[in-house]
Amino acid sequence: MSRPLRSPGPAATAARATLSADDAARFDRLVSAVLTSPGAALGPALRAQLPGPAGVRWLRTAGLPPTTRAAALTAEQWLSLYRCWRSVASVPHAGRSGRAPVGRPSAHGHAPGALAAPRWF
Image 1: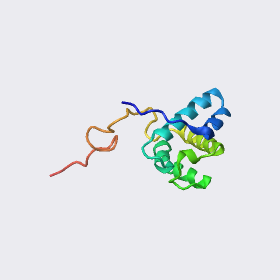
Image 2: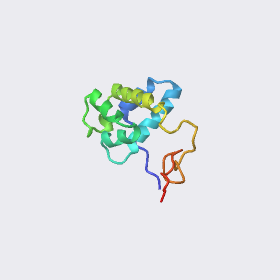
Image 3: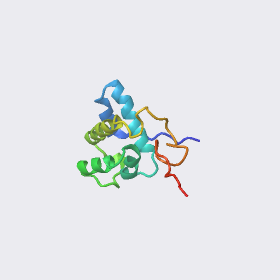
Image 4: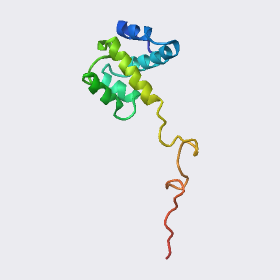
């Protein structure tokens, strides 16, 4: 059973209207992820959407506490959040260089290329 979609609110709708068609689709993904995440506070929702301390940093620069609700954001804050999300979403993640398969790094429990110390007894 899926959850019903929440209305993005007038501020998010106004922010979306200023974006291009491609950016509007990406903005919709961000808004739906923020609005459907468990809990209504922005702190946990941003922690799930922005890697590392980016969510906390954005809240601090916007002057908002982590307990702020998404409905309280203005159109300018939605656009600022979207720009932050876009800037960190395009950053490649460590270990995803394409050289090694994704998953368990090694079959023998050590780092790739490393071997256990030999036992000479």
